[in-house]
Image (cartoon, rainbow, N blue to C red; front, side, top):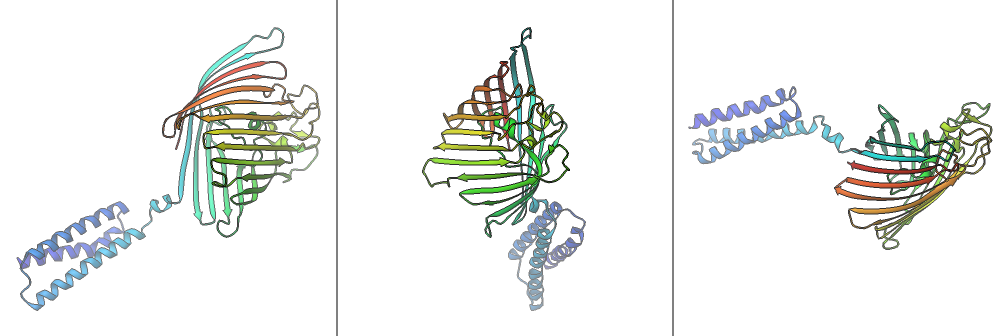
Length: 408
């Protein structure tokens, strides 16, 4: 019996000695499986030794004690090797993946005011939006962000919507610096509707920029600089566009059941916005036209919500500079007001009134709407929206949109 036990011990020790050599060519998963098997063998052998007769001589006792002390040491070394091996799991702790998928079905009715123009109806089903975001904590003060966007008929196949690096002071100083492709902080654009508000349609601006800022529990103040696509006639191509933003938030718990965020922003050339740069007739302007935006967002008991925003140009574009100005000087402005209520934890309803001036046939001069959304499951919602809009040329539009969306 002693010889059998000694033989098994020798084989076990031999396996443990060989394991690190074989592990060099084995995957992490294989190493873990091998480690579990070796531990099981050790446990079984220890049980057999307890049941067997104790060694009869001091030499045999010493041999047994020496082997028993060596096996745990081999196991410990193998565990350290597995822990030190490169693993995606360590990277996975610092990376967050998120996304949105939105499918929409819509019906649009256009009634044209021009004499002899026939009304138009259209309907469609579209995979409206697919977003995939990756956020990585590189080190304590460095973060990376990438957002891929796919919109049917707009960004096919895929658009790199955002990609930037952020340095922040965290617990050292309340400062941050962000550099890369981003939506510069001009406008807020909070909405409870499926369709984007008119303020976003006019003012949203995506550029490769550098943004520096100060942020704490009360305020976020920042300045971003970039080289816009719309220059003044005859000017060289330089970094001279900028956005200034100030946002103030009532810290949580400061006023029970009430949350308020408000702010304002300034852009040196509103012609650089995504909504207007494609409408600049000659690709440049005689003089840059600055823009201004202001908003307030309030929540009461996380059940009732109010969103109000104004955004527009501070001066006029010259006649003919905008494709929709009809040969007149135009000063495009927009505004949006929404009221929403969470009827239950899963059901929300909202109404809105929005509009603007000097928008031609680009955007409605006045628009009313209502929407209702229901969370079917966690992070899965179904929404139905109706909008009625009137344009400055007296065209009318009825728009119905149903949306099924998931977030992860």
